[in-house]
Length: 381
Image (cartoon, rainbow, N blue to C red; front, top):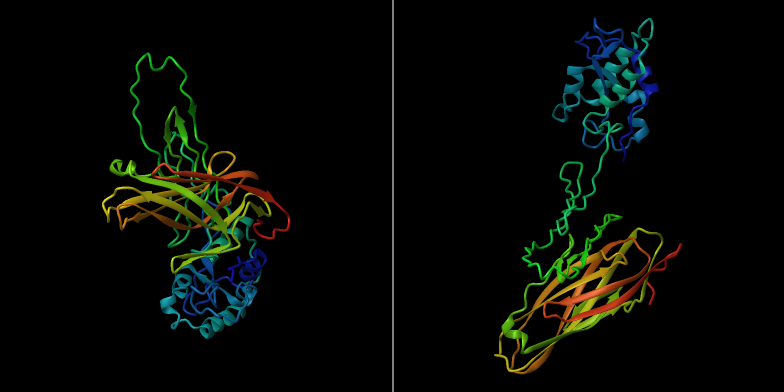
């Protein structure tokens, strides 16, 4: 159901049929003249006999939205009585039958001459009739999107929200802070600097892009919304070997009894109707871990970051997962399986790179081609 504003023609009709409050014990004028003005001001409000929304008193689910804003469902009351009648706690004191009887009496004594209501007064009467539901934003600028940070490596701001209980999206976390100490000799050469591009908005309620990395020589400051690995223990670096053996996009995936079950897996391209457009997929990744001469039970922390890098070097999504491999014997091999549900917003056509990196230094990159087609049939293999 959508609450509809009262038509100005209906407002004219209402004020053309009454001059005082409909409450039988009240003779308060509906319009009030102010000495300093040449036009009247509202001393009344249009109340709904049956509420315009389920949150109001005397709501009738069987009525249509047009019925709710029709002349027959509206009654003119002075400001105090309109406030009183619209209190849900007093709905039993002012039932539908009572208000309809008041309206019938009000209509029996129409004014001799209908007042000329200025256009501004008509608009105000409509706005006041909507109570707390309608706000007038005609001259306002409303921006609910998060803002990209201006400083390299700084986090983006969160998105806004309107309404009780609503929550705006979180801003991307800031990149690491680095202090540089250089000598004159060290700066004789060129230091490559690359400022990461800010992420773009999301569509259909999906996350927006994570920002691009900022680079100062060999130092990389992660873009907002992207993460970095925890350091891999130095004591394990010489005795543990890892590789990201494979990764597959799929329509659906699950793990059962130690086995991976994939449906519609192995995409090489992804089709969208238009850009920007949504991206949704299951992603399954396998990391091979081998070790030599290690104390059984030693915990090997494996972290994996997966990102779909756009042609402009932002990230459609950026996900991090971790697991612990505990060797049962001094020498051996294990395979860690990672499953991700990935969603994001695609802004660019062309080749994207699925970048997978471990905290051990192991890495894998694969291409995914994004194409636009007017009648999508889902991802293709």
